Length: 143
Length: 374
Image 1 (cartoon, rainbow over the protein chains, first blue to last red):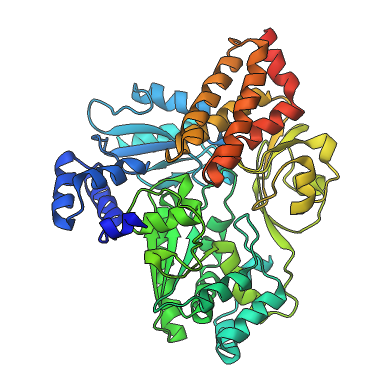
Image 2 (cartoon, chains in turn yellow, red; image 1 turned 60 degrees about the horizontal axis):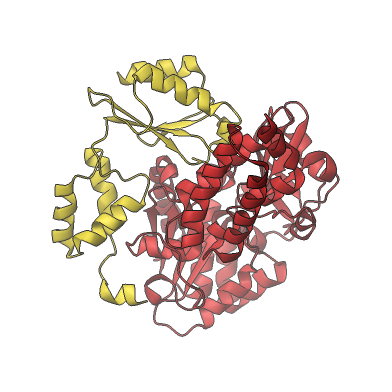
């Protein structure tokens, strides 16, 4: 309750951060400061919200953010092999970005595609029933 | 499927004829209960919000379907958005809300534009001045918890709050708020409209080691084996997980168990939203437990210590066991820790984060002991 009274105007902060994330692919310190100024919400609070949500990134990301699901249904359908395969293809580990700034890989929680396991999202677009062949084709299209 | 029937705003028309109180008593009479997992009577919730003193009230449709293995809400949003929106219209009419939100999980962003189009269509056809806004989450499992949704919409970190006060009296921006799951709201027009609407129909989400994963409609009280056989298990099933939070049970021992919340409790599990993840006999439960522990360690919101620190320690201990780097007594320590987390966590996330492990240690202890001997 005291939260609400101290910062009555936080409404709209998350959509603002999401917009910045969608536009730039990440939220820079500069952007956080700008949003704080625009909204009058303290920077600590803006940073707090930005770092709470898995889809908001405060570090520079690749053009294509690959999120591979590793929750039980995908795990039981060999998501670990898929993660290894993508890491090998792109020559980076999960949580990293390729040197050319094209791809970032993240392991994520269930994306609600358990009937199409294993599944992943690239920039929020879902790809399911993945095989190494399929992934190769998808990555090729992005390159 | 009952859930995919259309009502084409006829249920909304009927609701308006019945009046707000009339709809609420009809929903109560029909026995509609929440489908998000807790099973709270929907009519009672609406009545509490309607009777709360306030100048404004809100309706929130919880479309933050984060439970691993659950994808029924996605199917409803894809295949029957009209009826869902009509359900939101009826709920808003019944409680006297002028604004409603659909809290759509970030992972379902791709459904947003189509859903927005449908909202416009339905609202203009219904000649309603209700405002329905889609609020997109940004990837946080805890935001399926009702007070965490409120915090998220209000622009804060998605931390759950102490209840009471419940959202029915002190909800969004401090106003009385109805928070209903997608499946619940979609059932509203169907319950209003159809005399043969069955309150005991459930959507089973079955996935994991099965040939035909998917959403199946089935009556409450069906046998576990009936439900699982429908999805054609790959090999012999060893265990069934009721999502991550509901715990696990050995399949053979409980194959004749009736799928009803109170019966599933006998196997020390929670039926919740009828999510079932099948694990075949070629798996070690240690590996599945470690995978689930990783999920909770990542998704713990960090507000309370038992959950934040506990889930991390559980994961570390399970990782030690899975690589054969643990002592026999570690299993007892793990069990104690799992129970402490369950007993002392602040919200439902922490309180259920170790149910899978407590059950696994009870039913599949040998899997853990085998790893230690190796």
